[in-house]
Image 1 (cartoon, rainbow, N blue to C red):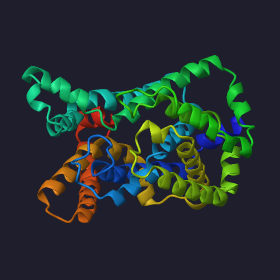
Image 2 (image 1 turned 135 degrees about the horizontal axis):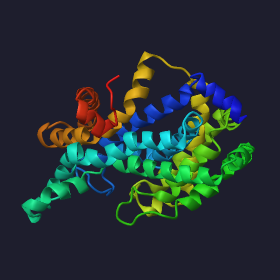
Image 3 (image 1 turned 120 degrees about the vertical axis):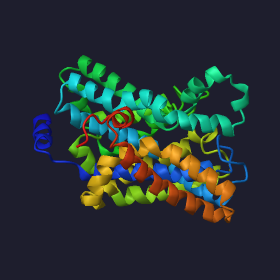
Image 4 (image 1 turned 90 degrees about the horizontal axis):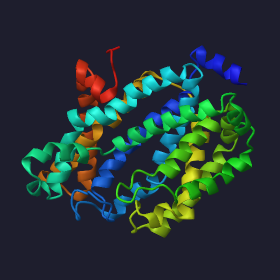
Length: 365
């Protein structure tokens, strides 16, 4: 089975639905950040307490529990496929260029601007001495880069695990898992949600995200597992919808980023059902490509890297200077963000040094 999959990917066969789910989820992250910056339920760093509409927070409740878990799980699957074609050294070298450089050096080049806005809008600018401002801006500008930083760490840990399990016995054993046991992994996800969560930097949830990455690598990279989930795509979708309604009714009004919400069993049941449903439905309905899909597959990482500064400025300027009805603020800010993100990425990726520091691109292909 290992040899068959290795030959398949060596020939260039791609799982288009995984590519599509990945870039589709990145687009969802861009949309979410508009609703996040206008949130009314106390999630930190909103534009203003009265900037949004409570009913519109529904979007954030529905996507926040699962969309980053899904990205980590797909990253684990992709890591398995990459390591079938690359040595450990080649794999890590690629991750240094594509993940470590953008999530560290990129802070000093681009993301410090977001840090400046965070500090300024938070009212802390005047209290910072001039000689400390730039370092503080750099530290405050991490924003969505936490995902890339954690992904690099998990990639390094994965190579260490592979050195221990040199004969791939764990991966082969995990491929024998039944569909029932895949569903019962919800208890593992729920348990992982309780541990290794940083107290202040709450997005760094090492327990659940590390678990999702390993599950992607060990279990969901198997064709048999993907096929078994696809066979149940409709029941999984129905269950996910039912649990999504139940979860939203239960926690609407509570901060969707709070421990009370994220650590609950109901939330994690909805999370896992949503992840499985998206994987199953994606394989059935979205396993194809096009010129647009190919462009999004290649560009979505860059969109993720640059978008947050754009959405910050869009939401702030629209709210303070647009003088529009609140409902229109969401739409206008989203349109500015999407267009501005694409244009900014296309500009920055053409600048030789900048494209490497921000996107890990050494050659403009």
